[in-house]
Image (cartoon, rainbow, N blue to C red; front, side):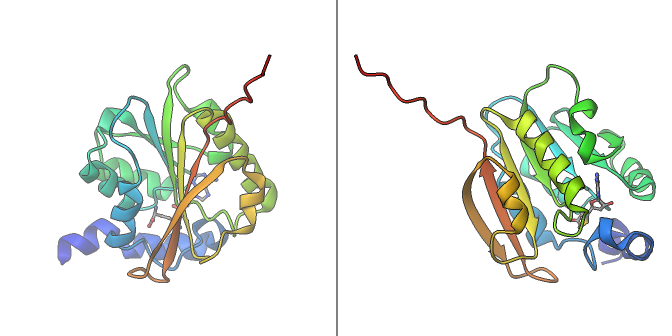
Length: 198
Ligand SMILES: C[S@@+](CC[C@H](N)C(=O)[O-])C[C@H]1O[C@@H](n2cnc3c(N)ncnc32)[C@H](O)[C@@H]1O
């Protein structure tokens, strides 16, 4: 139990929530049920980098590693300096970038294929221009074969979905979280071109 609380670091989370409520966008870290369901959406076959956006205290990071994502294939991007410091202590082997998801294209190693983006960014509470900028980065990095996994507290598809030119593959509601969360999975497969008939 002590280990659990040390890992989710509720004190640091609360401090960041009070300092930057809109950017943290949650009243506590995700539950381990939500974290493992998010991680399970990432395919392990095939090469490419997995990017986690908004890792906070690292609940989903831990679940991604447990799921089988290799440390060398995982890139973490987190905006809060306090969370970054904590994440680097907790996961010394991971590449943890202190940066803004709205600048993602500049933060990923050039030429590296991106397999999936796993995000717990509060896209509904960030300023709409920031949310749009973030989604544009996904579009640029995930086309053609990538996957985006994002949870929200909306049990229906959130409004920002209209900014995303991607196919909504499926949703999964996780009740064992405070509050219950909805995981949405989007694929960025390019549409099959029409076959030109002679
Ligand atoms: C809802 S919390 C999720 C924390 C953790 N992944 C969890 O599930 O408990 C959102 C996280 O996104 C981070 N964040 C917010 N805006 C960001 C941005 N523009 N770029 C990167 N991280 C951001 C916050 O600092 C916070 O850690």
